Length: 173
Image (cartoon, rainbow, N blue to C red; front, side, top):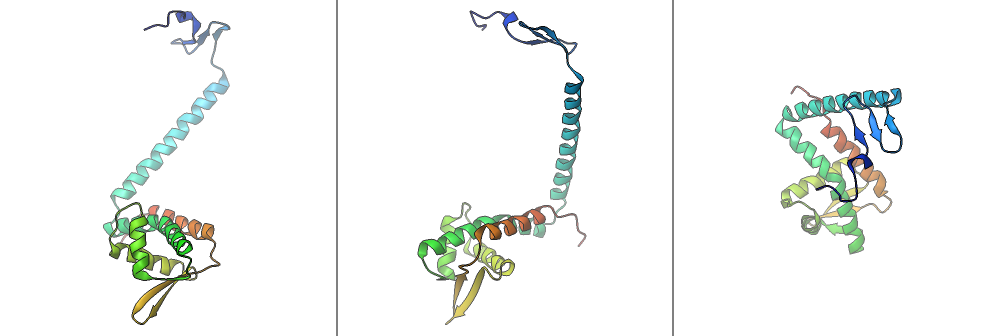
């Protein structure tokens, strides 16, 4: 339904020849700058679509092991943040592995089994040897978090590793 106080001539109208009719200015034509912007926009969309197609092809041709590894690496930054927060909240430098796994299971946004969480923690141990350390005392595993570790550096490193794993080029096995 049309607005009762507005007329159709009160708004801007585009004509088929590419000119704009405005009530104040009359007719405005498209300038060469606009066509340049249009060319950049079209070329940009072509590039984006080509990247999306390449990414889709790469994801379709990845092996299940590569998929699982990429998923694990993508979870690591958040798991590391939760792990650090757990040590801060508990106000302890060393915590039992079973306790950490239980708390991670409750805190992580997805439902992961304890075996999957242990795999993630062991991956963190392997990737960040100075930040997280595993100690075995009287047949009980304990995790020790470095007090000097900068969380932003740890997160940046894990995010870059996850990006690398997600952007794997096709490797013949």
